[in-house]
Image (cartoon, rainbow over all chains, first blue to last red; front, side, top):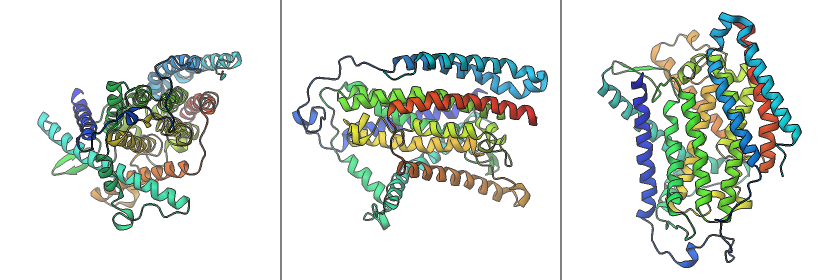
Length: 122
Length: 342
């Protein structure tokens, strides 16, 4: 099985070489005449003020945390999804019911978050 | 098969596919400009070459000769790493997408995909979700406020579509009972295309694919009218070009994914009934894959020039309150379909 992965390593190597070549060619042909105005951040022609290294309030941090939880549920569904047809042949409806209950619980949790205003914007 | 056979075969195939990808990317840019001109009753680029046919090469030459400016406020390492990541991810994702049935050439069977791994779908998902890092790094490291906003929006976008994307692929995996792209395509023989069997999943995946590739109506990280250039405001020369190429390469990969997962890959319904014989059937099937991808690419461009942009809280609402419940429903729907017909 491991030999199936050999081409993937080649693809990754070729992509990396290509990426380095493109980034490197950026400095290769163009002129290099940096000056103060050119190197300042673009702010629609005005003199830039402040910097961007200050802390920024991320309004959606709660959604981001919920995202992690729900994304793990996605991964939880995959093994069942791969096996579903054979499980159905063997166990009938009992292949589906546990996952159905799980999805219902997930949906209830989602509705709870929704009602509590967890997805509300600011 | 001996190890050197595999090595030579895969290197030849990789160089072949890379050439096709690069040519498609450059002509996709031209196609985008031509189609947008057509939609807006303009002429579009028509000076370089025959009717503008050499425009992509002129663009590359121009970008190569531009000065590469790195702002003083920028974080030099991340500022260089971000375009590299973008292009690296865009050009290593195609590895598992099959573009044709196995053919026989020089007396040996050749598979028309670079690698057949049993976790192909997970490979694509893993790499494409890394793509958000390129944009977020670019946005944060540039030291410009517009870029920073673009980077923040990019991560907001990622957390709103990824869950429904994962669940809609779950439905496809249930139909195929496998995560291997070849098995997924073979499970859609005849008219059993997943787009027909599970239309809800198809639509949620299609919308997620638009968000994934940062295309309008979800091109929030870029949003020219509000954010100048968004995350690539402070990039010039080939570093800018690498973001550009990555965007179009991602479009091709997203189209390939949609064709593979929902439109039957290289399958043409009832082609065996025609009795065309061995080489012709495979050629038509391979061509059909490229025709389907081409149509989807046209659809991407068509949507971009027809639909206005979403605001990013609207996108999060759409992702969480509409597409997430719909993609859960899709799982139940597919389970019911399998239980009724198997």
